[in-house]
Structures are given as structure tokens and as C-alpha cells.
Image 1 (cartoon, rainbow, N blue to C red):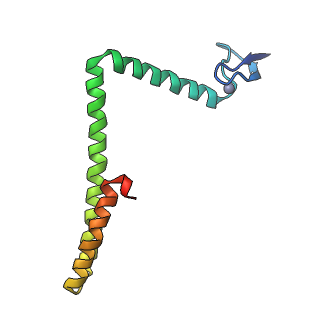
Image 2 (spheres, rainbow, N blue to C red):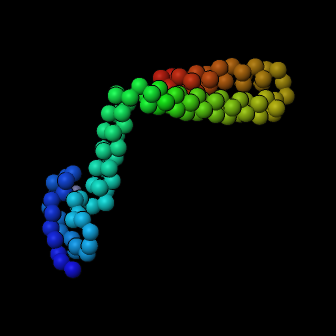
Image 3 (tube, protein in one colour):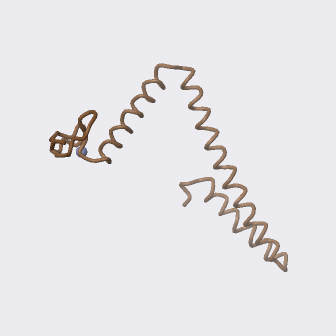
Length: 115
Ligand SMILES: [Zn+2]
């Protein structure tokens, strides 16, 4: 076993480590390696995204499906809350108040700028 030193490929920091076997270390910490991997992956995705129309189509479809799913979930959670509140009501005035209040809530759920 030997003590080796290197310069981190990401942050440029000088580091020393015990070299056991295999390739020499390129990064000072696991965090720097992870960050570098993330940069590589997003560069790869960006490249494919711009060069491969099929890939782009699929990615945007996946994306909008996720957005739709989250929106549906927020909707059904909000609906559940409204129903629970209305069940507790004893007068029409109370129900009207809840509906009035949830008109605002709907804006908050669907329009992030309204928060
Ligand atoms: Zn580093």
C-alpha cells in the first residue's frame, strides 16, 4: 500500500489517500465524485436531448406525465379536504363559507404566484 496524492478534478483541491488497488483517485471526496457524475449525466442528457428527436419526444412526454400526476394528486387532496369540511357543516352559511374559502385555496393550489 502506498500513500498517493492527487488534485481533485472538480474542485482542484490537493488530496492524499491510501492507494490500495485499481485506478488512481480523481476526486478529493465522494461528494466531488458525485457532483462530477451528475454533471456528466446532465451533459449527456442535454446532448441527446438536442441531437435525438425521438429521445426528446420521450423525455418531454415523461415530464408532462409527471406534472399531470402531481397536479391530479393535489386536486384530489384538496377535494378530500373540502369534502371533510362540508361534512362537518350544520348550516348552509357554513357550507357557503367553505366554498368561498376554497375558491381562494384553488388559486393557491393551481397558481403558485398567488401564494
Ligand atoms: Zn474536490
